[in-house]
Image (tube, rainbow, N blue to C red):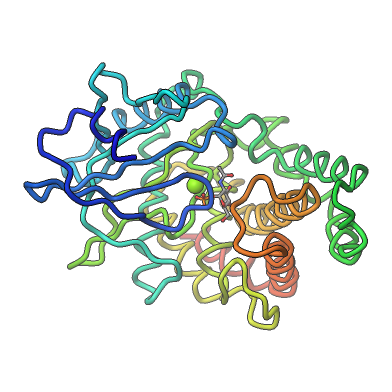
Length: 353
Ligand code: GN1
Ligand code: MG
């Protein structure tokens, strides 16, 4: 890693480096140089992102598009070119690195106040709005079928058939719950395919911890982690924020009784997202709760698939981590179902305005 930083066009001398953030996928470091400038150096996980060059093309195209629309340079990530002018460096072990200017701010794992969560909603809403005129056809699909829920079910079925590490016996209850909802889980994909809702350029990983907030004002500065920016549905972007940020417990909570949906935060996020984004159709707004439910179910399917396939995708901290994560997501789905009527009511209020 110390080697990699020297391959980027930074003018000062790196003197300090530490591991940074909590990503489940990439390896992230914060670099400080002798004139106190700071950078983020990241090694792209090429097991997950099999086309790092295309991925960086997406990221650069999207950040340039947003940069042409914002007045404050802090509102969009600024990538540093490598010595050869490309926006990545591939080392002799074929590991891919990229570097961007560190923007001083902080990310939250859970909202501390309603205002924090509102800010993150405005940031993701704005992001959607800023990209509403971006030509989606120039983007590569960096992870094909990333939020294609029926395809995620298909992969779970395969993992169940193979049962590579004999774990299926421990998860029958979870599988039953998931399969009872298989039809419904395909709804958003169906609506996209029929053209009832538009395919947009979306972020696809809209967790609260992917928004950078200003240290002093706590206002949203910019949206981070653009690896999965691809054509997709706004419903999933909205939904993933709810899944992560409007939950009453972390996504891998073991004590299931702690996990549920906080309706107050659901409302706060809805308000912020729609304040930031004016380009959603009425049909999309109506379907926002479904976005939250399906993305939560989809992630449970993904965690469970990884559990059955012996944890090769998500980083895990202990043997049953993926199972614990899947259970927590399913508990959240259950609670969303219990609060379905209230979620609909909240959305109706914002649709009328
Ligand atoms: C992964 O690395 P991170 O935490 O930003 C995953 C998301 C999941 C999330 C669950 C490329 O994101 O889809 O929602 O974990 N990213 C990828 O925590 O698979
Ligand atoms: Mg991510």
